[in-house]
Length: 113
Image 1 (cartoon, rainbow, N blue to C red):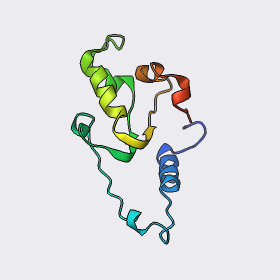
Image 2: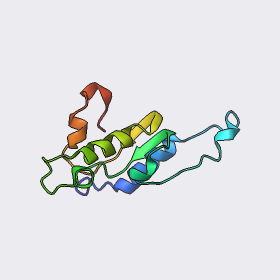
Image 3: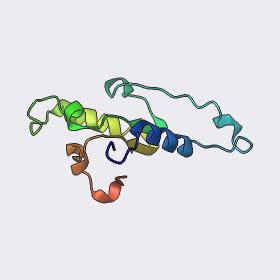
């Protein structure tokens, strides 16, 4: 991103605005969309139409220093995180490497931008 002189925060901001652009005359009830920021553990029992998972990277998702050792707790957190969305899930990562947990899913289930 630095080489291309792209500010990732500006890029995300523009995309989020585009995703949530709403015609107020057709859907006035959506004008006051509540946004809740929480940890994976605190999100248990919650759901939302659209969910953003930030920092979806092995260094944050797998607790063991040896990232090849994945605990049941890590797997449970992964499952909790991806099952909060009712309609659309956006996974955000700054790593060049695909997160281990995404490697477990069929490539037809996600797009990488």
